[in-house]
Image 1 (cartoon, rainbow, N blue to C red):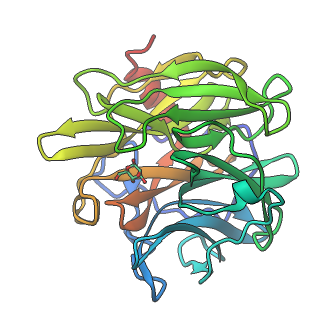
Image 2 (cartoon, protein in one colour):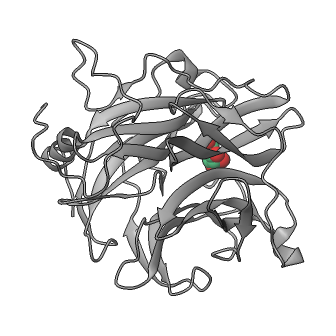
Image 3 (tube, rainbow, N blue to C red):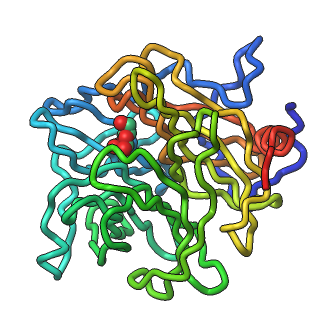
Length: 333
Ligand code: BMA
């Protein structure tokens, strides 16, 4: 580990990425921030919890879309900004999407946002209540005005995650068809669209692995990262224990041109609930990654994840080490 001369990431530099070196004695490929949780549940006066949230580089700092459950336990998404990616100013009011379709503009609930820069704007996807959970889609250029588009799919679907560039001339999205409740199944699928409205050519990417940390269901996490070894996909996997679901973080490498083809998939998890803030909260034993920042020249990766459906946390890895780890621990296809 520690060979930083390979530069696998295809993408820009982000010299001010949040970063802490791997703690002495730590042998894990992904390690936690010493400042966790970086966003407390009560950052806003009325918030019950702030978790499963997405951040991107913006201007000289960072911006994001945050899942805020309020003290009525309504689930809404809010925009926020930060200079350092650690200390966040989150808007008091939920995002008021500009939308000329009244049926689509009506808010039931919004949660688990992802943010993805494609070409000229930041797209936001989230789990959107529309007669059941489906994938809401919107965009912004300034994190002030947000525009809402058609939902990507019919209910029931969750974990809609866009690729950061068109693939074979089309927008591409991962998603996880589900049910209305705490879905006890779930595979990751790949779909494409010519216009960010009509989605089709659906392909199964991967499903749960029996007798493992990801035996019940899986769902895509942060925007996939383009590397010389394929798309780096960080995702969550769920195990059903006698005390309920356990959500952990894992990783795979997908083919660059045909991302529904899994090249490598790490059999062990990268991070699983262990710290108190991951094991205790509104939903115990949850780590749920929704975003990752990277600095291509150094290969540094900062992963944002929700912990115990309560707070927002940060973990780090070095991408070349992570790719090596995925390959060395792959039992894949
Ligand atoms: C999923 C989603 C996530 C949540 C997870 C664990 O179904 O609702 O928002 O983090 O369950 O409760």
